[in-house]
Image 1 (tube, helix red, strand yellow):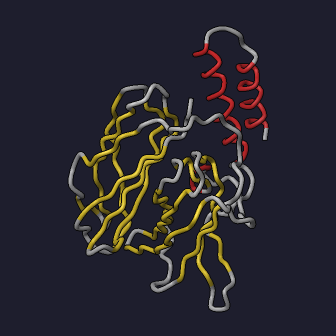
Image 2: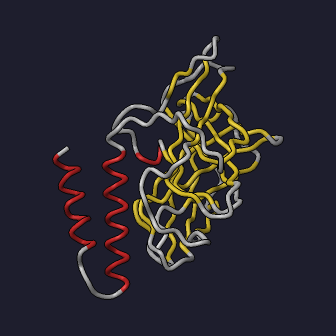
Length: 245
């Protein structure tokens, strides 16, 4: 925990600086990153469901390189939501739950939904190297409260995403390049990007990538690996903002 404590001290020290708005905003971003880092050290198991976020559909996608769970979500609230904990796993024969992302020190955005627009919809993706049983029933539960505090405007920062190449195959994995553009004045850190492959209206592939930093009004091309059993006919993309001011 020494590393976590040091990170938090630095972030809190930044919040005490005075000066222009940009300095204060940088301090807020540093504090948010630190709080997420510390939160990820603890196990995440959601027991109280959110009344504001509806789990519309949960699908299991399997492939030779692992498995993915896709979770379609709808925000019923009239405000954006952020940093909501999410638990995913597989149901047993008697309805018992086997959690896939509950362990401590799991990457923060493998246990949290970064953001969702007011009355908007997103598809969140969890991937694992484990080959889950074919026909297993996946579940997802979204928590009621944000794990860390943040100031969020009525509109989330605009992040545009588009495919920069068609999927290619190598060693059983499918890869594609994704162009991500930050059209806002808010720099992004650990930006979450998800790709979903569809065939005849069904998810047949899914994957995610993290972009460590994307400056304001700038673009980056990101490689992304897809888990799936078949070559998708089309690709859907999501990019969820992680910084809000």
